[in-house]
Length: 390
Ligand code: B12
Ligand code: SF4
Ligand code: SF4
Image (tube, rainbow, N blue to C red; front, side, top):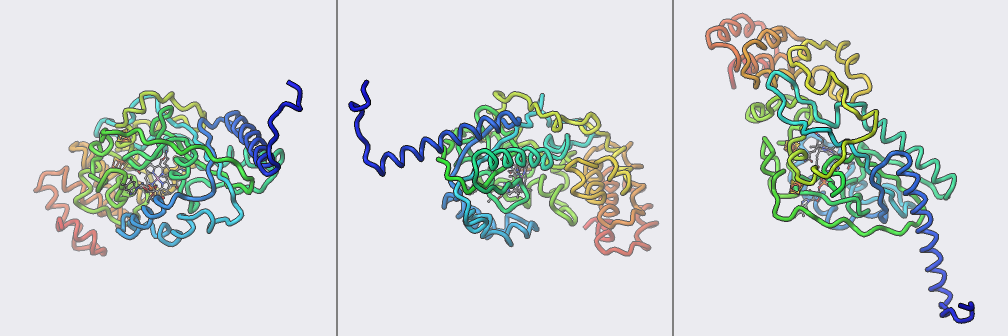
């Protein structure tokens, strides 16, 4: 065709078409680079949160579902609106990194501690950050624009942004899932001043299914798509600093760091290929660790064992608190000596859970004798209350 036969575009339309073409080229280049760096999912969104998600965040906070994660309330304005976080940002590149396990990670024997899959390998923050940094540097050098990277700890609503970027949808368990990777994607975000065309948002494929809701041991979902973090084992074992409510302890079972039950129940996982990232592969000693051994960790031992692991976040006292709850739930009297050793622990958090565990494992007479020995010298009222069984 001779060029004179081409339909002529008006100048503004031609300029818009050229801008779109340039954006597509940049998007394709970023996508290619991200996949080469090992990300499995890439999508583009405008740097804004759909009004509905922002309203749901407001509701979540107003109902107190965040528990003692005060930082969620403090930074709510920034979390709910990328324009407040960084006004110059125009687009967001959302990235997903798969950590899908080889097999169902739930259902370990009662004398073993269940550490959730995400925490069995190297700390994903480091892994994700290093990849995001490489992608940000490459993009700035080759395509221009300014970039800020975010993973997990920043006040960014990563799940709604990932949905907006077409990576998947937020399931009834509230996590972002996709047909290719099931529930097992870590999320990270690059905010950029580049103006990149957005992808179509992900559609919801939950349908009538409610397996995740029914799988939750603590009934932490007041409604589909809504989580009350205060009942979630992930919150209780990782974020919550104080004593764990008496009524929730038996429901925690042997989950000592996080929980995967709602994620693992999802039928879309059957399409997920096991994660390939070496650093995220589960450490052998964290796949099915013995409660009796974990209960022995002192501060230095804890730091040695969990250096480079997300587990180090709780510190030794909270971790041993969780282990003692699992021991109390084990119904295995052979684990009683591992709890008894902690009746003189310097941490009241640990002493209290040692008392609780022994109350469940020892015959009444033996427990009463220990109480008579220890209670008179116990300085902490909350530990005292555990001895009294209240
Ligand atoms: C706070 C937090 C937690 C809290 C609260 C979790 C929660 N669901 O809010 C606790 C400690 C419990 C937690 C647990 C876990 N977390 Co977390 N967590 C976060 C964090 C820092 C913020 C999440 C947030 O903003 N929550 C506030 C609520 C309001 O937002 P939302 O969950 O998106 O809520 C939406 C729905 O509830 C929905 N909604 C609300 N009401 C209604 C009503 C209707 C009708 C509808 C349709 C929808 C709807 O709209 C809201 C907005 O989209 C993010 C990182 C980040 N910066 O985003 C990681 C993050 C969500 N966590 C992550 C992970 C892996 C986990 C765990 C799986 C870890 C584990 N194995 O133990 C569990 C999963 C528990 C669960 N079922 O959610 C990943 C999830 C990745 C993914 N694919 O989604 C993230 C994104 C971290 C990361 N960078 O990869 N987490
Ligand atoms: S992570 Fe566990 S406790 Fe939390 S909502 Fe899912 S199944 Fe329930
Ligand atoms: S288990 Fe069912 S309801 Fe829950 S996220 Fe998966 S598909 Fe949706």
